Amino acid sequence: MNCRELEVLLVEDNPDDAALTLRSLKKHNFLNTIHVVSDGAAALERVFGDADTPEPPLPRVIFLDLKLPKINGLEVLRKLKSDERTRSIPVVVLTSSMEHQDMEECYRLGVNSYIVKPVEFDNFARSIAELGLYWLVLNKVPEG
Amino acid sequence: MNAYKFFRKFELRRVPPAFFLIVGSMPLAAQPASNMRVLTFNLFGKTARLQLSVGTLGLAVILMLTLLFLLAAVLAVFARRRAKEAEAANRKLNAEIEVRKRAEEEIRTLNADLERRVAERTAQLGDANKQLEAFSYSVAHDLKAPLRAVSGFSNALMEDYGSRLDGEARQYLHSIARGAKTMGKLIDDLLAFSRQGLKEMEPSRIDMDEMAKSVFEELRRAAPERKLECRLRSLPSARGDRAMVRQIWVNLLSNAIKFTEPKDYPVIEAGCAESSGNQNIYYVKDNGAGFDMSYADKLFGIFQRLHSGKDFEGTGVGLAIVRRIVQRHGGRIWAEGRVNEGATFHFTLPAEGEEHELSRTGSASC
Image (cartoon, rainbow over all chains, first blue to last red; front, side, top):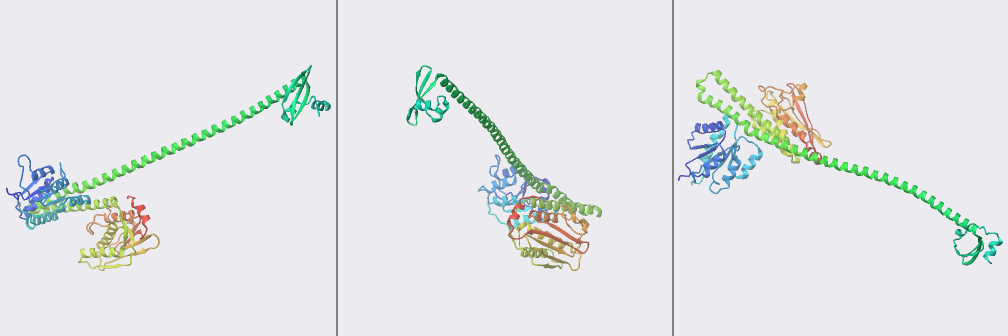
């Protein structure tokens, strides 16, 4: 099984934000496989598998929103970072929240990066492009 | 001498029986002799005999009994009166005790009620604070997402289909994007403002010289194209929350930099107007756009602006934040200005060592 088959898992409940993120990555020529899920439960299922796919391919990086339906981003992060199999997957929190409590909790749980999504489109597109460059090109992860 | 003879001699046969009572002796024996009774007394260790007629004796006994009865009656009357008095005093005392008990009970009830109400209010305040936090949290998370869509898709439209739109349509798209950007900034500033009211203060000694200097250097680096003259006078140390007080300097100095932009020779001055007593009065002065003193009361209101967005950027939150921080430190802030001649902002902070003053005002929210 190719463990890096899925490259980016984008956990985002807002379809507009998801579309803008995908567009920015595409615009900057990142043609990696990106899978979008819209809630925390689906994200955990995608990573840990379900009855049909007990051992799904692990993503190379996870872009995670914090405010999500069903299971929130912090809980997803906690589960990912407390499991031996998924601990080494880089998790980038992509959120609108500049709240101190969110940042503190994320870093306590072992987030790899915390990005506040800018409202302004130019800044947002640039942030996404830089994230893609850093996590998909520059950053190295152990090959499964 | 024979007592009988003695009494006879002095014709004391009719000596009042009270006499015997007084001398404390009792008849030892009474011997009948026709209508006479002989009484033998033991008087001071000597035996005395007294012969009395039966009538006299009876009279004496009756008299004695009457006297005893009268005495008893008088005593009884006195006793009853005393008893009544005592009873009345007792009743009064009981009533007083009852009143006091009731008062104490009332105080206890009032105290309990007060404590309950304080607890209730504290809980309500805690709830209100939590709601406010939840509100800002929700604003931070939810309110910005639609804005990102507005800004994002109007830009995407411009990028992908701009060539097919005429100039006017492109202008509209710019306006949409600019509006979204401004609103994003407003939301961020509003959140920053509400955070200043909720944040717990951590007072410590602040080297104001060093802080003002570092803030100014930082702001100068952000605007390298500006030729700014900054006169930093000696600033006494203050006591306050470091991050908050730094925010005061950031907001006041960046305002001064912003509003001196049209000037050829912008001069910004920071100093201390007064440092006697427990409060220091600091000031930031510039020779910039200034303001009309008739609007001075509006300067510190949230979202209040005295200049148009076209002339000077801004959301009207900076000075509101400064005022909130100063108030939370128990200080005051005021401003003087003249249109096109400049503005001076004065603010007071506790002088170093005013710990008590600060902790008292620290809990006040505004």
